[in-house]
Image (cartoon, rainbow, N blue to C red):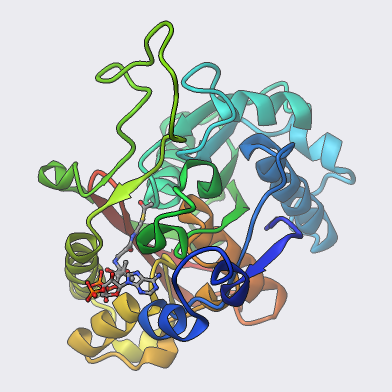
Length: 332
Ligand code: ACO
């Protein structure tokens, strides 16, 4: 994972907008967020997370290669989940990461479905590895700098978001030797909620016009209540479906790693599912909602803290603009 060093507390935000640490904590569970400096873009944070991932794989003896450069050359695919690409539409941010890593043999693509991008990205990468016997390794990155598309005067949205990146290295192995990996993924969308989380300006529907004076930075508009209700519903249903369809009992699960959007969403889902809240990993207090990055950041924290043991069964689950949602069942 990689997060910017600049840490902005709720109290600091309360100096510029009408809010308070008490309101933000009690309504969201957020205590701080990390915000990128003006020279940092998605590929920079994504690259930092990617380099650390390759270094960790070598350090842990998970691969035979001795240097990140050597390991980068073995990558067949780089998938970047992001909705805040370095450049608007061209080129894909994954291509910038591919170049900087020196991953000459890797195909590169972005996945853009807001906060669900990492979950979709993981399944896409796994499916592409399976589809060709010659593809063996993929790097999946989740990175977002929502601070760039946030209206910092809108207290209903700006308190929610932070910047960050996380990455995982996927390797195809013979199922007989390692009975693990991504066992099952559920992906879904409900386009009827397309307007609940939206960045209206800049696309082919509302392009910038010659001579236009930009008075406001284009920013995410959100119907918070509608997103909240959707989130609780799909998180509950996705976890229940995975457990039921894959025959998983509560005792089989080591952890659930949810997208970190609002602690209250997770608490409400836990209550509906009658699953103890402690089974859900939450780090939203420190990073706020980092969108595509929130799940890989959580995985890295858990992994480095020794809380994920080989063979552990975990579920990742999330939702985002679109509206979209999904979950992965993973044997660590
Ligand atoms: N500080 C103080 N007061 C505030 C703030 C704030 N930051 N924000 C809103 N309020 C006020 C409102 O003005 C309102 O005041 P009123 O009653 O006088 O009108 C009151 O607090 C309650 O506002 P609500 O919007 O009803 O608050 P709610 O409890 O619904 O919480 C929240 C709002 C936190 C945004 C919640 O709806 C939520 O978390 N929604 C989901 C958001 C989300 O997950 N987004 C995901 C984005 S993912 C992606 O794809 C980018």
